[in-house]
Length: 343
Image 1 (cartoon, rainbow, N blue to C red):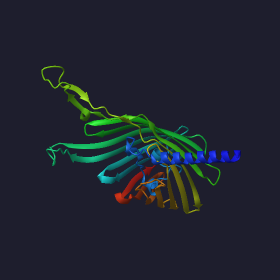
Image 2 (spheres, rainbow, N blue to C red):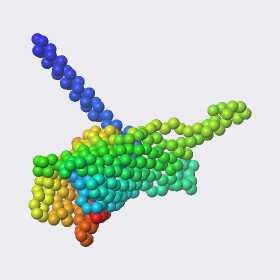
Image 3 (cartoon, helix red, strand yellow):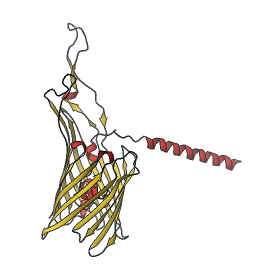
Image 4 (tube, helix red, strand yellow):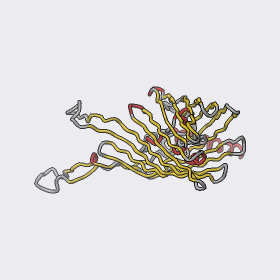
């Protein structure tokens, strides 16, 4: 009898925990963070592999995906520029540069911008425009450092300033990215982990939320036209924790096949998985494929494909050109192009 009672209690507790977990899983917190442009990943190579780049990132774009990875780059440094025509004619650009300092590590700078084209200010009285125009934009500027502590383990960080503006109002804040990169002895399996956008809250302020308040309807008494402004909420940045694995499952003199998988835990959605692969010929020509946001409900992201070429112009100088295509379901698709130099 006592065993049966214990069993019933355990079953009830388990059922309650499952229901409770499902309830919390249904609460995704989508739309509760600011600076959403920080969730747009740069780099056609990374996108072509489905965004599974935490344990792959060993180039300039690791400044975004895992800052520890850039410590494994060769040569004196790299520079790169990525332009993307985002959804709804939004412009997205990412630029980064790094320099390897012997015996110290790798320093890097990043700039990210997102811009919305100008639109007419339309009002009830002037539905075709009142002669004014509004726009919106986002900016991120970062500085970081990465270092190889051993021949297999690297760490890195990036400090960032973030600003978002809508017409005459703006919000700003600071954030930090931290990452680790470890090459295991088991067939050089790589384990990468990164925390992105750990920082302050952002609150909108500016002329657009200011107004004159008349607390007294009598013009002949009391204060009139008191300067005031709307009270605005503050919002967290899109904090995320990602952990990834990658390994070269085929590696010969001319052919290399790398596979990768990432698990991501964001603070404004449910957990999801990215997976991808890269086929390289002579480390010069590349074909890539992947899938983004696996197991994430209501996501329009799905498969990605890409290609690239690395061309050595002269000794020590290499040009890198990459292209990627990402399917966004009912939102159509996005195409990525980037250009990089390794010296």
